[in-house]
Image 1: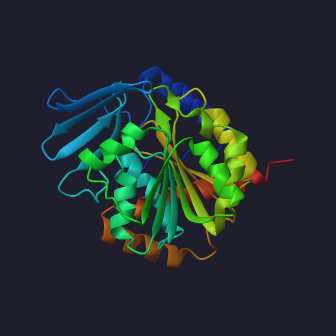
Image 2: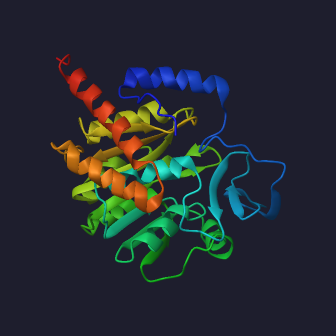
Length: 297
């Protein structure tokens, strides 16, 4: 994949937002539906329209627009098809063998399928607002019904607050909470990120999908930096308007580079995902942030 220049400051983020708004109007992965796709399901509820299409072995989920929300190979559901979901699991660079993961937002269940298949000792909790999305993930996208995969139907923000009250912590928290209007309201307030911070293990990592053309993107990023001061890195997705934000309670990058490179190569070989490229982009962002601190008052 062609590496892109990481965006590491609010100023540069604003420039990126301005550029993307000229070219795009939809959230998520910025992939338009193909006329070769066959609609195999269409339904509507108070929460909006859902369409499922199929082209060959690939099924895709849409929420009432031409922006592809999720995609899955029905013969290989454990493989991540969209570039932004692959970038989200860059968090494995810093926690390569998670035993507890929380997903805020299910979609077609591609991330849940990936984690369930590849990490058999991992307990996965999911918070998804829409019951119809959960039903379709099981019926059309091969999402397993298994005790290791616990799905809560309801508000992701309230679920996060409940987990904090219960003193539940996770190795990884992955957030991909969008609807047809953009990022879900409950995950773009500072109290939500305070709860996320409290629910991460000491060396746990947050990975969040943001869309730079979304009006709330700059403020969401500001809240993240407020709750995780000097511990936020950004990973732009090649040729997409997505940016994956990683954050941790500790400094993300360890002091030694060689062990991390070795881990990246091992992960890349195991999953066929460009972890080495992700590592290099994130390290550039980390160096940029370190340099910028020299000029802070």
